[in-house]
Amino acid sequence: MKLTRRGFFVLSSAILSSIILKDKSYATSGKYATLIDITRCDGCSNEPLPKCVLACRVQNKVRFPEPKKPIIPYWPRKTYEDWSDKKEKIDTLTPYNWIFVQKLQIKGKEIFIPRRCMHCDNPPCVRGCPFGALTKRPAGNSVINEKICFGGAKCRDVCPWFIPQRQAGVGIYLHLLPKFAGGGVMYKCDLCKDKIEKGEEPACVVACKDRLKEKSVFLFGERKTIYELARQRAKDEGLFIYGDKQNGGTSTLYLSKVSFDDINKALIEKRERFKMPVEVKNKIQTTFNPIGKVVISSGFLSIIGAVVAAIISKHKEKGGDENGR
Ligand code: SF4
Ligand code: SF4
Ligand code: SF4
Image (cartoon, rainbow, N blue to C red; front, side, top):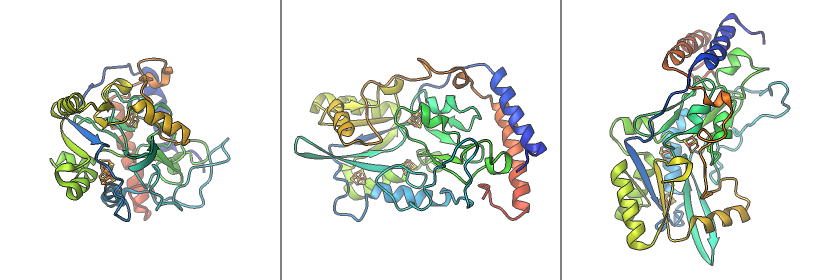
């Protein structure tokens, strides 16, 4: 496909803005936090699938990708990431599964760990995206704008937990440089942004609460309250905390009877893709490369947004949908 004038404009704007815009500081914490108490999680062993996982899938189904096939890898790559034939897979993170429950055996005991985006205080994914497709919201959540994302996976490269997952054959790159740029769209948990903006709790939190009532694994609330509660319980009950210091702090705190060193060792032994290292340095604050230090201004986002909206509108006139499908 030829590079259109519009496509050229988008790419030129992106490159130019990346060069000229300066770094600026980011909010370090948001309004909310989630406590995930793994001492209480049984992996929903008496259910067909974990309630938190099911709730997330139901909540976000309308946003799951529907790739245009055949998918063509962009030059010089020979492969692409396609999860569309594995939509039902629930034992890992995929573009169709934004939370999953890890199962471990440590010293004869079973441990279940719900895993999803940590919603970092200073998220490298947000600051590393050259197209400004990710934003950190006042609630504390980091959110991918699927209409702007090119699927370059920079966010995943800089995420200490490897959270965002890519689906090829969908997104804006198909209308710009399908053979030379972009690999699809990245997907991950956005902390149920639409629900929390309305003052509701995330779907996974509600599902676990419905099942376990006051013994719910998840607790969602004001960040200060959640932090204080987690620290108090850790002190009173001799529990280990994860997420308060890692990557410079996050909006997701785990409580566990087993140390996170032991948990991470078990994850490594099991060759799990998603680990929980205790020492997690924020790549933005340490050895990040220059392009990653670029912060895309709201002005640039407006330009991109306007151009993307124009492209999508043109595409819709031809019978396509909002996600560029
Ligand atoms: S977090 Fe709650 S809903 Fe999810 S697997 Fe554990 S017990 Fe079930
Ligand atoms: S966990 Fe990864 S994807 Fe989530 S906010 Fe942090 S860096 Fe971004
Ligand atoms: S907060 Fe919402 S999007 Fe994130 S894992 Fe839970 S249900 Fe899914």
